[in-house]
Image (cartoon, rainbow, N blue to C red; front, side, top):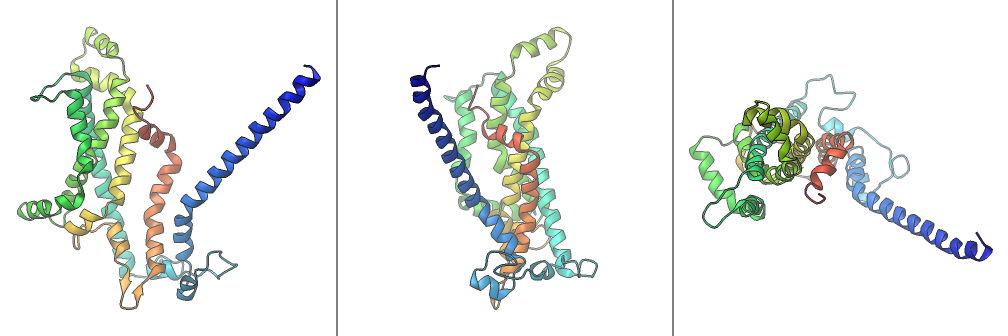
Amino acid sequence: MSLSEHEEGAPRHAGRIGGRIMIYALLILWACICLFPIYWSVTTSFKIAPDVMRGHLIPFVDFQPSWKGLRSLGLSPDRIFETSTVREEFVKRFTNSVVVSVGASLLAVALGSLAAYGLSRFSYRFGPMRNKDISFFFLSQLILPPVVLALPFLVLYKELDLLDTRIGLILLYTLMVLPIVIWIMRDQFNGIPVELEEAALVDGLSAWGAFIRIVVPLALPGMVAAFILSLILSWNEYFFAALLTSTDAKTLPVMVASQTGSQGINWWSMAALATAAVLPLVLIGIFLERYIIKGMTAGAVK
């Protein structure tokens, strides 16, 4: 390489390095912005009232951490082995959230996968609607505001005696996340060659056998992604949980929103509850990140 070529290449190399530094700086800034609410919730659970009101942020610098938030829930080290009605209430609400969100997600993945497989492999016609129109119809249900469905579901659940029951929330949450599951799984099945199933049929497998033994293992990563996204949406749902439950089936988001008293909002208790509610989703995001990304980008790249 001549001296002139080296001199011309140096500015381009420096420009690429500067561009990368700028990109990483922006990504770090955006990560800090996204993580700040979690940081605020965690630190607030260790504050006392004056620290909350003064907006202190940095532990051991702006304020001295205490167990006030966790103590109010009976979860602090000095009260964890004592009898606590608040802790029993928290465990009950946490269990309700787990049962309802996991149950709804499993049911949605099972039903949605079957519906998506039919839309991917067979041709349907309902009046002027074809497969693409039917798929869009499912997805369009997400446009409908939940408040529009409040009164119909309230009346229906009262007649069916499903108010304040886990099964009622499971059925409702299944309907809520089913369009997303169908959309994700349809693209997953479209990416699996039909020739694999045809070869399995030639070898003697039935249609169900080919689906279970050939298609399902190949589409399993997409099913996991759909399950995770359904779990997150069901776990965070508040509106219908507050509307259709009162005591037995109340979930954790409703308990978080109820931390108010005669003196105002108990920020330390709310922050401790919010931290406990977010923690399972954070762990899911850390350990199953690749499946979440696969679900979010399903169908975008062929």
